[in-house]
Amino acid sequence: MASHEILDIFNPDQTWIGTASRAEAHAKGLWHQTFHCWVIEPQTKHVLLQLRHRDKDTFPGKLDVSSAGHLLAGESVRDGVRELEEELGLAVRFEELRYCGVVPQQSIIAADLIDREFNHVFLYASTQPLAAYRFQEEEISGLYYIGLDDFRQLTASEIKEAWIEGIRIDETTGVRSEDRRSIGLQDLTPNTEAYYELLFEQALAADAEG
Image (cartoon, rainbow, N blue to C red):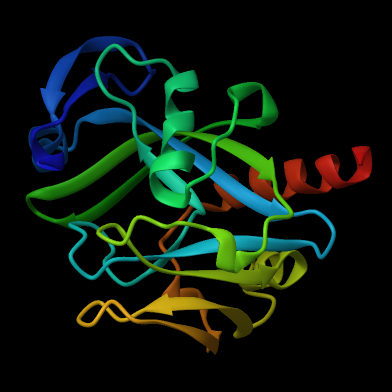
């Protein structure tokens, strides 16, 4: 089970200090590492969002980074690329990713659920049609596209709503259907201003480089 995964633990300066289970890390608010990869459709300038399953321990039912996961004890950031295949069915080499940087973030969800993470943020360009993604149904309840500029404006609170289009799976029946809806900032997992500044700065740089 995910709660029994063993993670490397760090101090706030990102110095390794030991290991702990994922459950202990979240219960005590211990700093650990995660892999975040944002998939961008370079031709249409859309960002892929995943809809978190309602049974997730943190932020159930929220729209989140395209693919993400914890780095286990002894793993390097390179090992995080497995998340793309596990969650989205994308067989990707680490060298195909664009590294944006690392951002420390913390979310105090409850007294015994404090998530402190060093998020290693990456970009991956993909023209794969949305219907071709094989997403991990026990983790993800849907995949959606949002316009890159709409996403930037929404996270900067320049607009209150934005439209997304995608595929949603009924968590009871397993049936997939097309879905289009308007979302607000409250529908997204929380990220800091510094996180989004880094993300959009790198996305614009990648677009300029072609």
